Amino acid sequence: MNKETAILSALEEVKDPEVGANIVDLGLVYGIDAEADGTAVIRMTLTIPECPLAGEIVRDVKNAALSVSGVNDVRVKLVWEPKWTPAMMNDNAREEIRALRQAGH
Image (cartoon, rainbow, N blue to C red; front, side, top):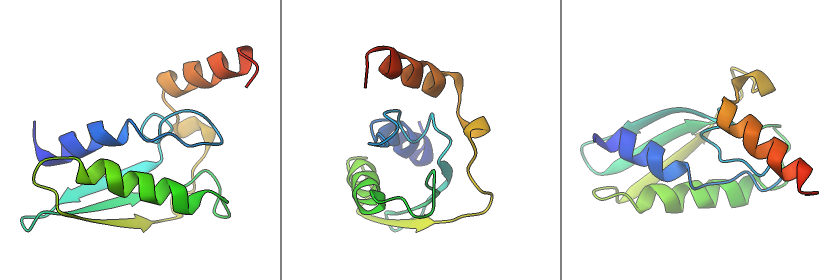
């Protein structure tokens, strides 16, 4: 498994606290570059630009990426183009959200 794939896998543990699904399944991660010096550059967006939990999500992304062997620094670049839409979610996110709603969350 290459480092980008390992980082993406680690990011599957990061949930959007408001939505309840992980940021990978939600389609919020636009790209990952693992540089030779151990820096991971993660390009991602949020469901809305004014997300009140942006700081928490970015912190969780950094911590998840730092858990990958060989990653010693993480830069998160929040981007707003292309704008996120629900169409970017995969079926896993849709099922997770549906299950949470049915459970009354």
